[in-house]
Length: 87
Image 1: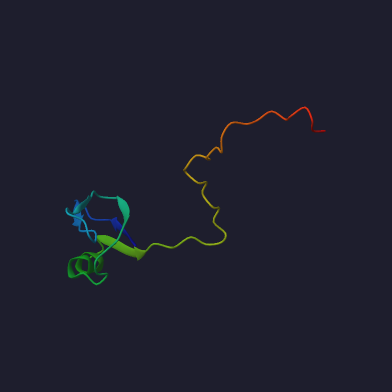
Image 2: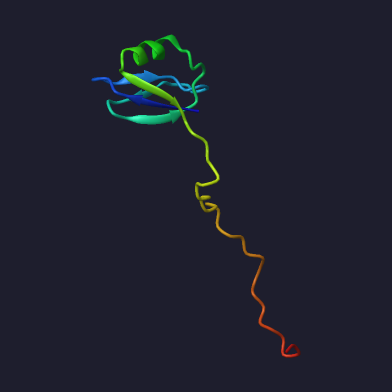
């Protein structure tokens, strides 16, 4: 995954790996996408001209907090009241 940031005066099209359509980046926009080839000649030319910045997206580290699980906790059934024979 690569972070692509558009620093050009106008929009730029990038084509993510496996996508059916290109992704339009407006000036100042940044996105993380999978690129088919880091050495793409078009991206290399834009990067050399200072119009875009392409950098590796850093992976998670141990110092980063673990995000909560987006799935709700699954209940195992109804809670049962304690029986009168216990305690």
